[in-house]
Image (cartoon, rainbow, N blue to C red):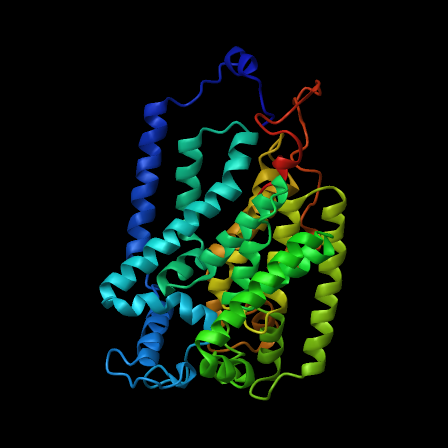
Length: 425
């Protein structure tokens, strides 16, 4: 249906939904989503947060540990899984060891929910304002949609750190658009906590933001050196041994590993994947990413560049568990923005709905125990194909172009968005 102006809506007999009815429907939707989330059998029991908590307690000698025992000597009882992040991440988690597990769990969940709120602010608010959407209605719908999105649900139920890192990167994107001298600090901190976000330093280099790239590099190196000073034994163990020990992370061929390395590992299992093929694939992804990011830079599209970098990060990382796919949220925001433009139908809408439904589907788990055959190759790597499609086809354009009236009338600028600041994710 073609969009109608307010006058046309009334003249054709169309009546907007009353506020009371709209809020009633939203309340029903929230109740249904809450009931589903509360009963879905895929809750991860805060496993990763528990590993962080138990590992630092083991490291400091609390909770029955032995003081002085190496951080990377810790293993989950009965498994080979241990603390996998750089020592700076352990220092960030260390304050949790001062509290009981219920307090630490509450703090971890609160931190993730706070990060999600900031992510919403950075990604959704510009789209809501640009299209003149009702804020309460839009945020309620978006929160319900995010609650059903597997990467977001898994990140929170695992107690993972990726939402916090994404919030840091998106804050930096905001600082980039305003020309702040502090741009790069968030990306540097994220890269010091976990290696995957370091690709965003590459984004700063490719887009010729030398000062921000220097700031990010200095912050990442400074944080790493701080960890070396405060925890020399742990730093030595990580950079010389633990970093290269993939058995600590888990089985690379496990269906949850939705990276290029995961595809190769499933094809070659039980043998190790061929490193040459992995390197060739990574080089191809990096080349495509650099080309597309440079095109985004040429038109001033910070938001698109960040989204493309998130998709590339998922592809090139040796391990991209499903909950790591929160890095695709900026791409979803770009697709949603395009889908909301008049006449709100066609390929942008199909693309946005398709990506969202795939990330909600838990589809890869259908091949958890058998990835053989053509169906196994396609289905078990469905998120990888989604990442690749986003990298190659995600639209880049000047920030918030003027929208035209459906009748073909004069352009109308997006409300309250002018100039470079509109590029903000």
